[in-house]
Image (tube, rainbow, N blue to C red):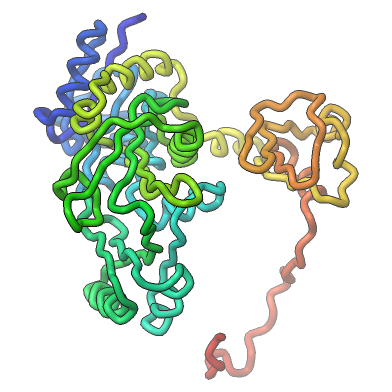
Length: 403
């Protein structure tokens, strides 16, 4: 184990989580400093990306561990992004933190990858509220502020009219809210799985107090150690990886159809889960950073698209395609200067697939190569005319409302 120079970004140096991470790093022989996130300056004046701290040039760090609170998400993610541009390793990417903080954005991203979640809708117009509630199964429903934390801004509406009144009141104060099905079978309980890399290192069940449906410890809930089955572990790891987080707290409900992901937390607290499980979660995080420090975050699309005429695209193997039944090595893609980076079949992803992988209808191939070659393999869409038309005689006129 080599020494790692680690910076923990935190505005709460004496909090349990920050102190445990610092202690775990020191116990393993690493050099560690806790740096106030708001004291950084992003320096874009030189030839290369750089950072200032307390008005002076920042010394070199091998890795940075963000512990960024909701109130400083924008500036905090900008600081993490600058570390990424400087090729400093972080287990929580800047885009992963930003995505996880916005409940709507996180839900949109996870839904693209077949992650189980309670049915959710998002509307703004008053006329759309009742149809939206009915789409998720009707009352009772859970109403969530997009940027609430620790159970704040999460309301259970038992009846349709109550839900409508709450949503209209929140929208009148310019609050954005999600409408979500109430998972009754969870009975005020949820699972917090602490993901580090590609495994769950600890898990606890949180149980709500009395009639309270929110199980957060900050709401008076209790915690107990729990052994997760393989499906809960798989979903937790996959959700954190999709969000761009290598260290995350994944909150799941025990639904009738299996795990239902509620939230992916980019700065999970350690006190509750270490107390409940008696496991050295902080140590597991530091060990993971030590093993991964040589692999800083790279914006793959940014790096791969700087060559003129080349780019990244996802190709769908159509049922009528000649590729169905063909081995990847015999597909002719390499001869067309197209490299397959991953093969996705359902929820399974095969990185750097072998030439003898036989393609099936519905497979998705993430490719890098000549855009013109890949364009010919993407189903054609109706192209819009490029010719600029003359201005109409009446440039501004009444139009019928859209449906």
